[in-house]
Length: 137
Image (tube, rainbow, N blue to C red):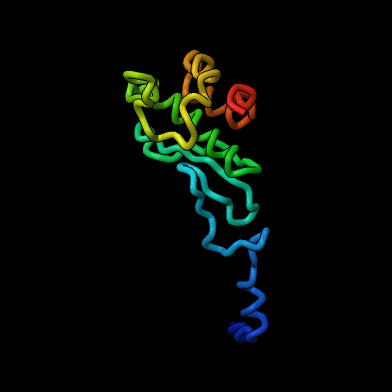
């Protein structure tokens, strides 16, 4: 068998020249919000939540804006922490007991009773489908 010819400099350049959409650099996928990243190829914002019990990230969905993804993270984080009894409730004097949210706790006062009646899996599914946006938009 003959070995294939070595690629020309133009072929090498063409092969690795995929540029991400929207003009951002390849490594520019970080966000200022916790739990939010930008997808390299599509340019959409994604939200992820770490689950210690499962030992992996939970994908919360893809979103058009960074703020939407951050709110999705907050809602799922709120549910997770309330279930574990580790905060996200109002402490003495109305002070936020847990500082892990991207936005103010008061922004989620309408969604808190709704998610309390759901499991974490149901909340993640509802967030992915956009069914909870009306409560915190």
